[in-house]
Length: 195
Image (cartoon, rainbow, N blue to C red; front, side, top):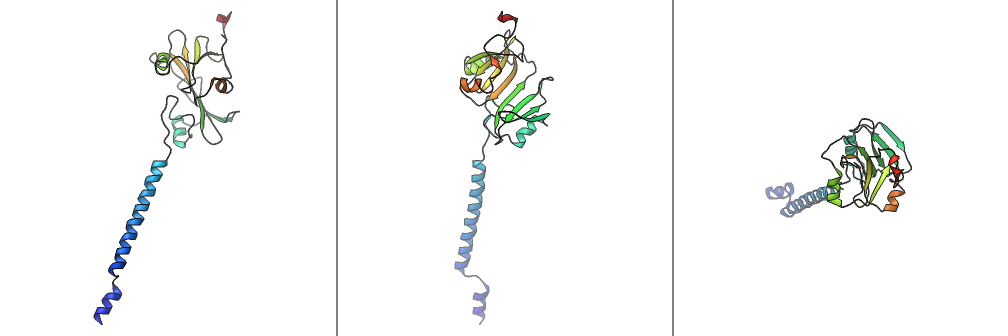
């Protein structure tokens, strides 16, 4: 009688083996799932056209938005939603244009003067710009140097090459650029020098 009570109160060796196998399989599945989720999260690369972690072609996440601060203005444009933020340059805001799917399309940032930040470093990295254009909203002494393959426009002073502003966009063709972000840029001189 005592022998029967032992069997009825304790799980058999087979039951314990199945329980151990079940626990090992469950833990393996949970760890694999967590590893898969971590490995498949999209990591936004830092590229040459990345500004404050906003990279054209990638999501405008809340943490990236926080890098810019609170928007001063939000408005709809023909390309998407444009966020305006305070910039280093007191009279010009940083602009970020985002698609309806919350993907960064374009970033425009005016920069404070820094004699060490020059066009030469961009030419060294990317070669000569594909386009050198004028922009009526910036001085005649500044040219828009367009690096289509890098997704950059570098506005630099003609005299010393110091960079005044940067535009970032997804790399594109000349035609697509000129019909979108480059609409206000021209090949003509926009000041008295043209005469």
